[in-house]
Length: 308
Image (cartoon, rainbow, N blue to C red; front, side, top):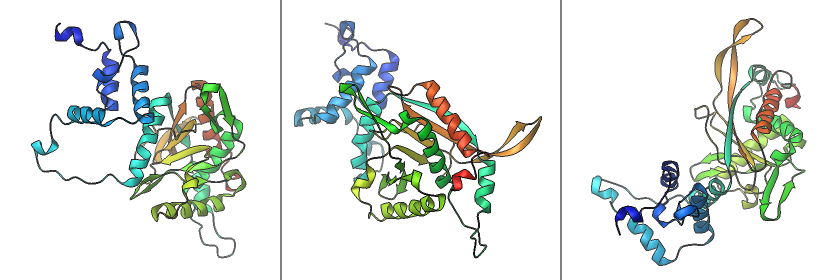
């Protein structure tokens, strides 16, 4: 029998997806006609590896496939241990990406008035300016949006029984970049806190994460997560949903843009938004409406209300 007859049947798109996942497509059993491999087969394969660890024989086989060429063959290298936090997070990220059908909605919010208001906040006694991070305002705006669109504050981790859990609490996850890796603690009951309290809590949980003083429980029980690249740079991206949540908001760096308003162009401060959502429970129209609501909550009409 020729090599061609033994070749796995799959489309170029599926083969590319396999390469992106780091999967040898020859090890995947196809469920379509004549054993053709489709995207679902790849996801099921990765999921089975997460839930059922490989035996030594399978590990050795995979190692041989990956080690056809050694990095050392091409020049000087240095081998280091993967940081513990990243090793812990890796299977959760693979599980989320494999099992949740991600869709990302990109948009921009006009935060000109919000930034002007944020810069004008002063202490009532000393008259000194109070520095409050924009993220505190974004958290408040997100909570208002979650109240109007409760499906974003839900989980479908019991999908086999067709159940969805709607959360009555508002615990917003915040992605914190640390030297140990990315951590996602929660700002608990954000709906019950004013902008100053949220700003102070953001500083505390960020410091606790960087100093490894955060309680493990604080990484669980969230409503929705915000991951911000504003302090680093960049605009739009595709954030991965923090399972068992059903959505995540990516925030880029704000920038100045000429916007046509009332018959003329005017400089405005724009904030890039990247909303990834679970397409099993949230459709594109609802995601667009959610982003519109979020933009309104960050706009001129709500800038003052967000400070309360």
